[in-house]
Image 1 (cartoon, helix red, strand yellow):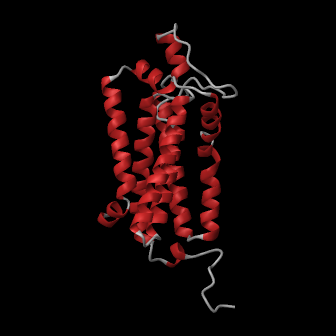
Image 2: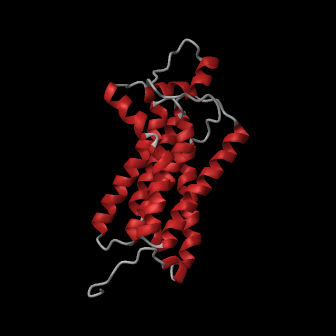
Image 3: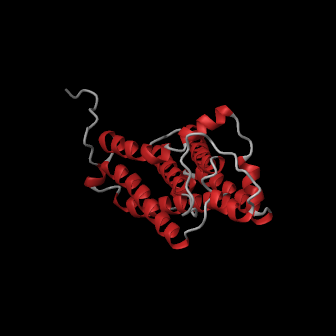
Length: 228
């Protein structure tokens, strides 16, 4: 596992800084005030981007799992699938135990004078707020993808840049939930932690089988030079 943390240091370090910064904001700013601060800067272009980008967490993981299964090792596909499945299961269990109110419900009960900025065409939810399932999916997906890509790269600089780019995509997904007022910052904080921890746990499990024949099996084998 020491090599794992060293090889994925960029994604992990950026994630820790993100979690700490968000945690400090949650510690020092009231819930409602922090939400309004983070979701108030609406613009037409941002509305369109976040409205559609937030749905990436709903379909892209499945497409990616199929592509990895077809063109990469079966074990890698199983790893990404397990990250998504376990993170989704964990999130749903916590959601249904806590049944926390989402921003629309919370503001209607606690700050009824506030009109949240909403985006046209977005179907709003009212309960099961903590943690954010979309954020969990984003971080579990892009962290798992970062792990797989970094494992197969020899250039450390390129690997670091890719990890930073994938981290940025995960953060954008988490922020989209706040921007659309579907979740609070606390929900994104929780979803980030769940996604990261599940991915690390899944890697610890699957890494034990990387030398097994089934893990390295390819449905569409890559032809070597000279093969006919």
